[in-house]
Length: 384
Image 1 (cartoon, rainbow, N blue to C red):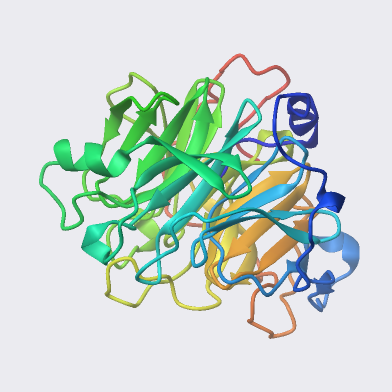
Image 2 (cartoon, rainbow, N blue to C red):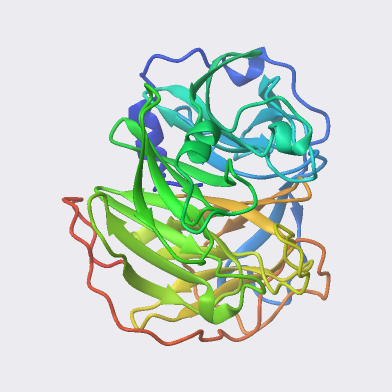
C-alpha cells in the first residue's frame, strides 16, 4: 500500500542488507494461479488486459514491492506474509507467526520495506478482541521471528482522538516508508501517524470522520485515500495530499465509493483503488461483491474508471504499466497496459473478480490541482 514502485527502484534497493532468500530456495505454495485470462470482447490492444495471477490464498490485505521486485502480501487471516513472483504467480511464505485476525478483519494489515528490512503493520489483535497481541509495527527478523518496534495500540490509548472512538487502540490500515520512518494511516481514529523505527510516534495529520485508508509517498508529499463515513458514498471517496508539517490537506480528486489505495503509474499518472458500493451498515464491513474498480485521476478533480467488476479489492501495486490488485478473498489480479486506451466493451458478464467497465464515468467535479514538485526528475503531471 503502496508507495511509487518501479522495477528500476526495486533494482536499486536490491543491494541493501536483507535476509530474503532466493525464491527457488523456499517451498512454493501449490495454490497459485496459472494466469487465468478474463475473456473480453475487445482486441488485445484496445485497453487494459485483466488476468488472474494468484488464487487460493486464505485472505488478502496490504501489499508492497520488495527489494527483489517481487510482490509481498499480508494474509491477515493466518498471520503470514506471502511473496509472489509478479511474472509467474508463484507463491511462497516469506514469514509466518504474526498475530492472525480475530474477528474476520485486522491481523497483519500491510507490509513495507525500509533499507531492505520488512516491517508489518498489525491491528485489532488485543484484549478487546479476545487476543493478547499488540497493535503496531512488527520488524521481520526471520521467517518465524518478529520484534514489535512501535506499539501503536498502547500509544493510541494514551493519546486518544477527540472525540474518542469505541476501539481505543485504533484500526491501523496502511503503512508507507518515509525517509527512514514509517507513515501509518488509522482509519478508525481518523489520523495519520509518523513512526520511527525506534518506536517514537507522532500525529502528523488529524481529520474529522473521513476514514483515511491507503497511502502513497512521492518525495516529501504524502498521498492519502479517504473512504468517507458509512455508507462510503462516491462523493466522499477522495484522494488528498499533504507534507509532514502541514496543517491542512490539498484536494486532488473524488467520485469513487470506498477508496482504499492510491498509486502512481507510467507518466506520473495517479490511480486509485475503489472497493465499490457499500450497503452493509456494519462498521468495518467490506463493500458489496464485484463492485470494485481502478480509477484514474483527471485534472478537473474527477475520476475515470479504467477497470471495474473487481471483487472487494484491498490494495494495489503498479510496476511499470502493470497493476497488481489484491482481493480480500485471497486472489491477486494482474492488469497490463494500464495506461492504454479505454475500450467501450466490457467483460463477458463474469463478475467474479475482474473485467473492464463500459465507457468511462466521471465522478464528482473538484478544483484542478497543480503538480507538486518534490524534486523528482522527469515527472510532468500528476494527472492523465
